[in-house]
Image 1: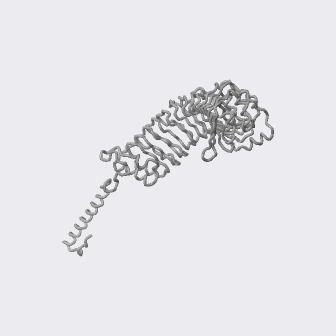
Image 2: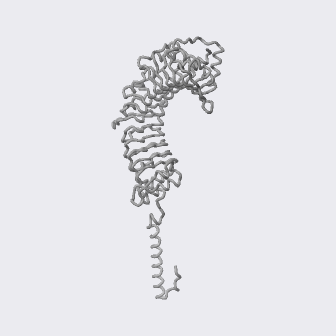
Length: 451
């Protein structure tokens, strides 16, 4: 069996014959339940840039011989255009993975993905010592493996590769923590995604110890077991390069007395669906994007000179927040709150924004209420949802009607603006007539011409 076959077959076998299929662009090849007997079907995937293996049980191949490669085999592996390999629905003996992974050092594969896999046993990772791999992105989703605690030596054997890894994702896999020693191996990691796991406050503090993930810029902790806003803040304080933090879908409790400082470089902060009823301060001074959607906010008072995007959809706001202290703001989302009206003074400020969304609110379509929204629409600032999702809640005569269709002409909405000039004109005519009458009687002037 040639080396290319070994690389592609070694982690995608099943006794039943399988087949491979290209997508329309011939860039993505998917293989189902392949066996050694159907190797020709695997080989047809070699021109693809993405190869996906679905289904297989690999224990029968644990003893499969993998010898050192000759120069011609190494050259052939280096000529493959495959950049991404996905393994799904596999039972993977770790001892086999440790041996096959060495072959990737001769390829141009940059991204490796495992989905719905079970890792069994424990591999001999000493064979990977001082072995460099071109893989820069490593992703695990919905996988099962032995606990990571006590496996620092295995990760140390992989350090030559892991020290250059830039993206790591371990999602939906019931992970409770990453031991501190393992975090110190990832010296170049830029992005860490640990969403949909079981990480708690205490384990988070241990994960981000001194020296762990020193170059980390993007961190997702979405949908874990985090409960303390203050504790999370303290846990990430040593991540001095952190720019993007996602804490969404954790049920956080606020400590109003906390003065914890978030990393100064933080630019994007996602606190949506965390159960917060206040925007807690201090916020990172250089923040550019703040997502507080799907919470219990009643009022918002924010002063951030660098803020560009603010998401406050699905809260309990009864009024639009003032944006006077956010001079760089470009995007404001206020959908599905309890806002009844956008005051004209605020509308004039909102008019400088590129993207305003305020659909799904119970609008009072009195003249002033409808006028502001119609003005924003004319300026082109109301995005998706206008006009069909902007409806009147009151007064009764407009209930259920689109805000767009509410008449706001001057005669209808501000009759005083029409009546007052008429009254003034009539008064002036009356005064002029009285003066002319007096003068004519006294004979002091020629008859006045009618005004």
